[in-house]
Image (cartoon, helix red, strand yellow):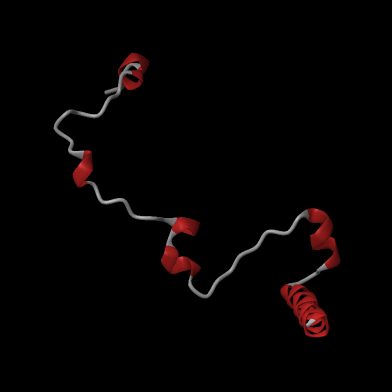
Length: 76
């Protein structure tokens, strides 16, 4: 049995549904359990060209952190 397009367009939630009792579960990238231990960063295309893999990104960031510490220690 095929429904008419008009019937599909008129879909509404029934009044007996109590949405306040509905449990909302985060899914996908919004699920906090998936984020533990995982930091996914999306690089802009021009930056991604300079870093072929995650090791090169980490190395560059570590160098930047070391440089920042050096600058801080000399500023004091």
